[in-house]
Amino acid sequence: MHHNLALVRSSIEASIYKDTYLADSLATVVSIDPNFVKENWTIIAGKLLGKAHYVRNVGLAPDNIITHVYPLEGNEAAIGFDFRTRPEQFKTVMFAKELQSVYVAGPVELVQGGTAIIARYPIFSDYPTKGNYWGSVSVVMNYEKILDDSGLSTFEGAEISLRKQRLDGSIGDVFYGKASIFDDSDMEFPINLPSGKLLLAANFQLRNIEHIQFTEAVVRSLGGFVALICYFSVALLYRNYKSAHKDSLHDELTRIPNRRFIITLLERLMAPADNKQPFALLYIDLNGFKLVNDNLGHEAGDELLKYVANRLVDTVRASDTVSRFGGDEFMVVLRGVTKQEQVRKIVKHIYQSVESDPLIWYDNKIQPSLSIGYSLYHGQDISIQQLFASADKYMYEQKKRFKDLTK
Image (spheres, rainbow, N blue to C red):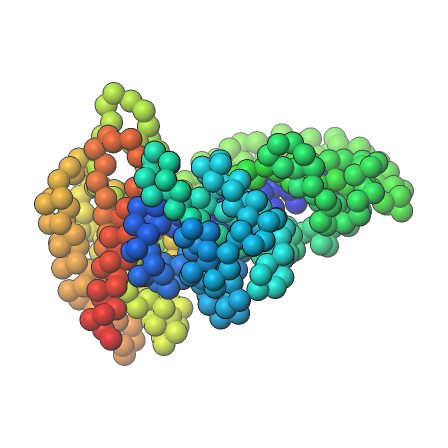
């Protein structure tokens, strides 16, 4: 029972953290250039929703008044909403401002209807000083789906309740289950959030005690047999561990390094040290990939991803690292590259190599097309997210030019 509840807790925690982490890149881009985000709102916000699992919509609120929402359909009522007119929501926006970091609020009632968990990102126009408050970005998450996917709504053997613990340590109202469960709980877990935490309490249901006792007796009787199996399995497990660890760092489809690998590499290259290694980071996005999937099928899309991955690996140096960052996105780390002229020369070479020949798929010719952004690292005090955001912004500019040309 303890193990199953811990799995529920971990699932809720991981789901909120993952989408909050993804949305942080949007907030970083807004901090760097809010006008660029406004002009390209549909593209940038749509990209976030395409990657996230639980984000319902995202809003931009300069001076705490919502001016942009994506998707707009179904959320029209939010446009023009002034947070100051809704004290409970305004309080969460101010919490984020005071923290100078993301604040996860909720569940809260939405202006456009329904309830949700909301990640509030304060935006400062003078980053990193953070003295001039510009407004906020709000990322609305479907908390009911988060709870359903965690297995909470179908959990057997216990009654479960949830409530919020605020940053000041005060306890909020129970928003899931019965409030009485917290008065005499059999077990409690904290669910850590980027700010504050949720508290999970459980009461075991008496009708399951006999079943639990029977299960414990069976487990004890089988203990010796299980121990024997474990003894003979250790060597096999250890051998498989190395193989599984390697696979966890590589993309299953393209067999090149994956997102986890590239982030680990960047953390190592940017770690505090006297001998930091300079590098350039390329952020590559496939143009028109969705059309390939829609018109020719996902098998054709998979072949295109493998085709582009192989071309990228063949084009760069052996000391460089090509990774699939997710979906139709790739990242390349160019070690020792310190000048924009070097990067532009490499980018030009990549364009020529990847886009020169089409992929032949049965009777179809699929012409690869790329949008490439980049950022340079030479030991400056910058986070991985800021490095991503800089490359991401330049890549979106390239993608916008591509869309303008293909209209």
